[in-house]
Length: 219
Image (cartoon, rainbow, N blue to C red; front, side):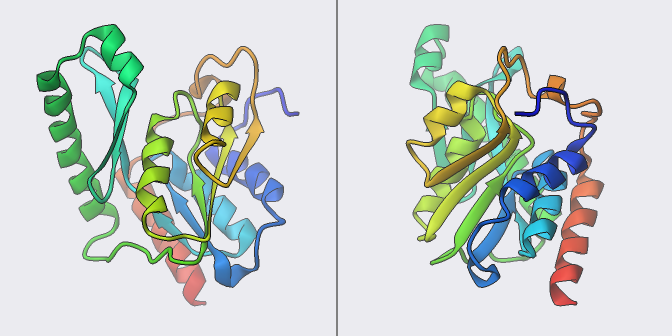
């Protein structure tokens, strides 16, 4: 298993695409990337699989003052997933949870407008959906994405990431059909330490990659 950091998200996506080469034929495939950082990875995965690419917006619910530490996540369609253990351990009351949720709902709506202006949600019924992000730490965002997609009737949900915490990858296997983690290093630390270049992906980069993928699908 790879033990050194990926140069960047694009190279991570190419490595992940090679691992996913045995998936179902193209008519049954759809790659959904979690913005922002998952989109450069998903772009390369979709290209490797000759599959369409779209964005699936999910927002982490971060602990006030320590926003990088998630106590849950929300996804399109009004789905919310809470880590009740974290909420209880930190003593987060209903007011705090509701306030953070509302703020992230506004950002989720903004990103939906920015990345998918006027577009309907992708039809996943009967399809093999590959959910891609740049990594899995707590898994809160990915869990919300899986829950939101499951009710829409896909044939299979495959979670695919270049790097993830081993325990999180194992946890997600209980709620999805397949989990592909290119590497699960121990100790894990954080997603960012497994990339040489982990600069934030901008809204403009997300829009550009989605437009390129759309143009490729039409060619």
